[in-house]
Length: 483
Image (tube, rainbow, N blue to C red):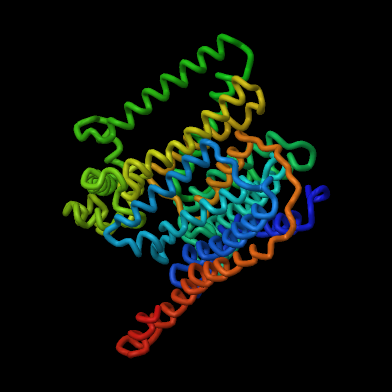
């Protein structure tokens, strides 16, 4: 892919093609000597690699306009989403926290800016389906390794030196499910699409990821979501691909009835006197969740448009705290910094504007894929069917859990691939002569790495050192202040 391109273009593309795959190994990163050893180092690692990719792409775009972004509906909507959550951050009761987040979550505005920057760099650089396949392969290979570690650990086949809490390297079954789910659908797509030995390789990846989900002792949400997604793939195939008209009509009717009935049942869950609400509340831990969601709804009504800002849910939870949370029936869990429901989380943190824009990104992607398949016949049926099924499965799973750095990255990898396929580019221009003024980009790169990666890492390490200092020592106080 580099043979016919100039030296400058090839050089910066090599940087991108080295560091982009490294970003997608993020789920394997942890450091037991850091505060929140699974989330904090993982997010810092992602931000470091994504910054290198982003600035390499800026150099590339300066010297070759073939790699400058072409605005389309997905990129435009995602850009508006980033603008929207930036406004939400500025209006937050704690703008600093909304920007940085904390070491436990690491998903503030800063993280979303990095995610958007990596997305923009990849969709501008990787123009063909073949360009994306190695990146997708790295992601599902990492997910397979995560699954394998989880299986070996949970079934006591191998004894690891660290407690993974049944969640493999994610150390949490919910986070593990959110990460494995998109990779399961990516692996399935690659298995069905590729040929020869690669089909065998991706088939093995799918089996490993599927097994990691199915054999996990916990994770009801990820198991149910995967099953729903696989059933939907089959139903969509019958409804739009196979040629028997009667089966097509029946399948489409079933899909419509299922969608309507699922929506009605979902709404009945939030109607206090409905039998559906009673059934759901009988499940373990659900009475407390309903109290949390009621607090979230009250917070949304207070600030409906731009919300309270990223990482601000705990403010709403405490402001509208339900005293029933102290009861055994509600789990006696009296602190939540997330609603554990994607709808309420986004409405509270980003408001109606941000939540709508984020949903629109995926809706546009799905509609564009189906348009290209049904009307233009420019793509095979696998991608619209599998991506649609993944989106539904991911939404269902996130009705009780939420995404973190590793799962966000997997979701946006799939979205980036779909964007490139939906809006193919064939524009190639000769590169310009090297512009030495572009070296000025090294200044913001070094600043960004230092300020957003190195210093937060140092802060984390100093905090841990202070934590282990004697209880009443001045070193502890000074360490906390410095951290």
